[in-house]
Amino acid sequence: MEIEFAEAVNGCQKTFQFNKAVKCLTCNGTKARPGSQPQKCTTCQGKGTVQYKQGSYAFDMACNSCNGQGTFIKDVCTTCRGQGTVKQLVTETVSIPRGIDSGITLKIPEKGNASDIEGMRNGDLLIKVEVKKNPEFKRDGSDVYSSASISITDVRYIANLGSPGDGDLSKQHLRTKEEDKGDGGYPGWRPYLPSG
Ligand SMILES: [Zn+2]
Ligand SMILES: [Zn+2]
Image 1 (cartoon, rainbow, N blue to C red):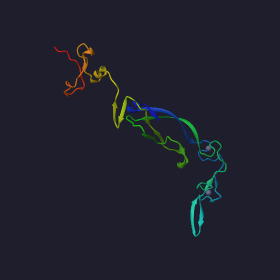
Image 2 (cartoon, rainbow, N blue to C red):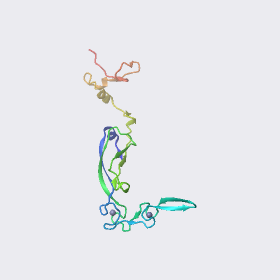
Image 3 (cartoon, rainbow, N blue to C red):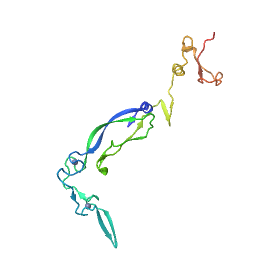
Image 4 (tube, protein in one colour):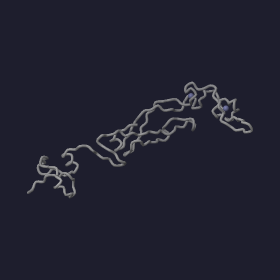
């Protein structure tokens, strides 16, 4: 998910849609046509494993016929075509925490795809956040640098110095190197202060 730079700085709520695998309501996730029962696998006799012999060695392997399930579905559910899940367009809202960095993956528990690994429970929804590049700002960890060009008006506003005298900006000048003795304040400039 791509978010704006300002959204990453301040945090935001994002609403989005995605195709999610949800439990098939026709078969209730069993993958079998309602009324039918899973059949015992005849290859492995329901054990899920078959024994292979190689010379004097014998070992068990997962049954290929039933994928180790021990059962197979003869009458598959026609709604989900034996998947146990169907795709559904869902809407989710996620809270993006302020200060998130690009490339971070958010995990939202139990909002992801339903899966038969855990009895059709919803897995976690993983959202990878990409922060759009902003040419005026550069991020370094938790610090944000701005390379935006600002006018003297903006500087005065940022410094919150108020307006000296009649507020005539032309009376403000950039401090020269000689004048800049590093006496604090904002290096490189100073407001013009009327004398007397
Ligand atoms: Zn189904
Ligand atoms: Zn089998």
